[in-house]
Length: 341
Ligand SMILES: NC(=O)c1ccc[n+]([C@@H]2O[C@H](COP(=O)([O-])OP(=O)(O)OC[C@H]3O[C@@H](n4cnc5c(N)ncnc54)[C@H](O)[C@@H]3O)[C@@H](O)[C@H]2O)c1
Ligand SMILES: [Zn+2]
Ligand SMILES: [Zn+2]
Image (cartoon, rainbow, N blue to C red; front, side, top):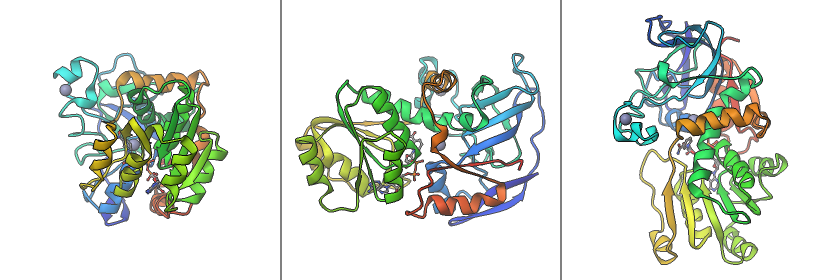
């Protein structure tokens, strides 16, 4: 079957791979929709690992339920893309994101488990979750990034009335801003280097305001607006200027959540964190409960995530979609892939 694999730096190829074989264990699905994630972009930019078939945010229809007796052919599902061992302390206490094996065989993020940029895929049975009929395929493909934002906001523990800055208006930033509002933040600002994305954060209703991260006066302007800094900063970008701006914009004693990922080390002004006693908290992935919560929020129409979806492309359109998402000027934030189109 056809698939999209990493070929080189910023280069995919549409190539061939073996179809997954039903083995009585894995759940086999036809992929309906797959999301392109900012983390995938890091691998595409690096051009490594070569041959990786990405796609860890998806909706599928079961063609073989494997060992899942509770599933039937035709059921619509999604899955946590992670590979926790299931028996360490982290796994047994409901925190698979702490398990040392969580990313080792992650679906769409490891060479052993190809992801959703192919018409069919095999999924580890215990990670599969059946989704309700009233949540569309496109929404189901949005569950994973939505859960990342929910986890970050849960860790922030935002108080009603708090002022929140979200650094980076990609999908992770936008859903984090959305949940910050739901938690009762009185003032939510998104900082962006991409004007079109900044405007989008405001027009989609998740931010009260956006600010230009390229403006050298951004921090001093934000200090004036907030009377001394934000209670919470959610860093959803990962590069050095972005993380530095998070430390500069938080108020003394405030909290910074680091969600953005950098594949290499970044240099940041630790003196700001020390002298302001900034509480710095990393955030990775989500718990299984948070993943399910996002499905429930969609089913109950408490969150609207389709507004973040800009386009749906074929496997041949994936290369162009990545170029669009990294242009620095395009307003597109989330592009989905339909590998069976
Ligand atoms: N911790 C986790 O579990 C987790 C999960 C998913 C994604 N991520 C990471 O979160 C980050 C965001 O993901 P995404 O899908 O939204 O990616 P994205 O690339 O679409 O968004 C990043 C945004 O940051 C903006 N930006 C760049 N420099 C900036 C600066 N100095 N100030 C403000 N904005 C700036 C970019 O214009 C872009 O819009 C990525 O690093 C990704 O790897 C982490
Ligand atoms: Zn992702
Ligand atoms: Zn474990």
